[in-house]
Image 1: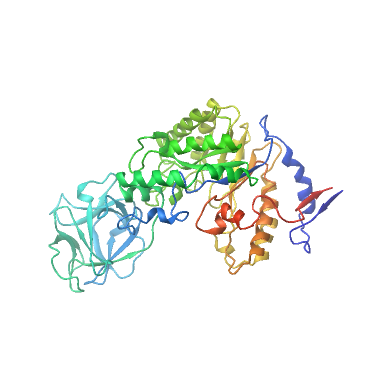
Image 2: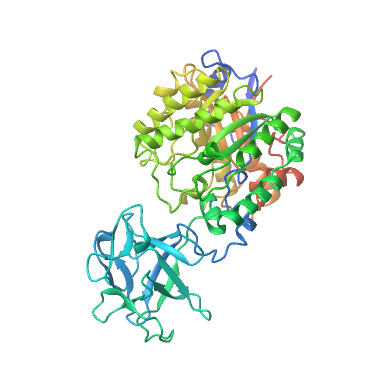
Length: 526
């Protein structure tokens, strides 16, 4: 006899027959690699790929920490009342003739040190002094890599740090002339008042706070000290003991591409993360925990977000074949180093590539090459391929993944990051899990296709004033559904200053997020 029970038992789901029919498919293997168990994992996020939102205190000691790489600044002339602008978004002169700031009036910082910066404009060119002209005109025509002529010092007023002057290498300052052109010929020795043509008011519209910003912000000496302390204290052996004793059988460990160059990675990254990963494998062996190595940050950034260690929000991965090959080499390094370790369970080739920048063609090319290099070193490790972010077909990787033994598709499920969740009630969020996520998950679970993995989920949402009981119901709904993924799931994250994002906090405060606390399961067979 088969019967249905839900976390909200007064409501019957129209998917009953559909779910019962497809539930049997979850036991089907893909090729000859078949999981002996469902993965119940937790992400060790914020450890080997730093993110400020997970541990803000990491950034506390950075001087001028509001001027990190990727910070978006707008400069308004106090005298003219107009914003600096790169005409046509770059490729021409700099002017100050806009009363409203938008994309052409926004400059991304590339930090050289705590006072010196380069200014990147909309089309990825850099502001510089026109050395081919009279030596004082400002242009945005320089492509990467910029040089000395494209390096500026931002001098802040001690009484009002939002008032600044911009100093060029020849010792002069930018000024806005009466007919709006911007030149580098002010002595910068006037008052900081509204009649000073060299003074600008800045508007900071936000930026990134990932590992690039952290290490470049501190500089090589201080960054090395900060990161070693972080790696040695954020995740420790007792965490693996805690994980093992609370029903978690695996960890998903995000790493950055620079780990393959340890102990001397390219600047601004610092050495030591590889040694920390080595220790994680020792602890995993001691406590019987499986390890999923997750390439969270690919060369050039696969999505432009801080968790992929983008410098300024640009997404460069996939644009050049050598970038793809470099990423394959990183996977080769990791799998060759750990292939014989019994705790290696899976390798995730890349986290959250973003469409359309990471095209399906470039992704298929990489996933195929990445799979082959894993198989060169291991015949047993599962190979996880992350679905792209954005409005894409959730089965778009099936043509390539279905032909590869031991392949897994990673889907991330959050009731966040979309306006469609903003006004949902508790029950509407729960219904969305059952009525939207469950059918999609079954759609992705086919007899001749890859395994399915919910690589990131969390018991957090946009519901205001939710009670502990509400959170538990929401967590139960996700556990009931995501537990049906044929490879398993991974909570995001183990530790986090945001309580409901922290598995450790949830467990210690009696929120069941490793197995459902409900006396009912979504699908019961008896």
